[in-house]
Image (tube, rainbow, N blue to C red):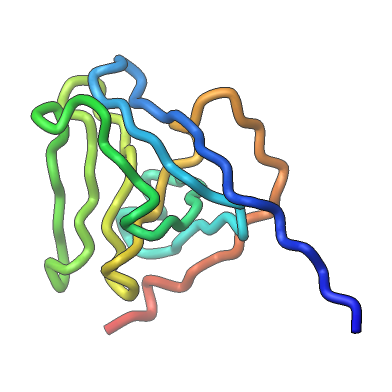
Length: 122
């Protein structure tokens, strides 16, 4: 039996545009997603999903502002200074975060994102 070896998770640093918010994630880049719900469609971010244990806020908790809508379940976090969407606590998997890949430093990801159909959720 031949089994494929999955890439090991690595640690990456991430931040907002102005540098007020710094965080660290661990991921093996299983996939990227985009979402077609109303807010994701407007922010047009590509996201990587990480378990809550694999995101660590290093600096700037007081610089994050939170936005909730519709069911008030998903928690979208933005830097209140520069307005950059950093990450969000997911609605369907509340122990995971969707992380804005554009915030991750020194990484160029060439993966076609999977489209999540959030607009169809009740």
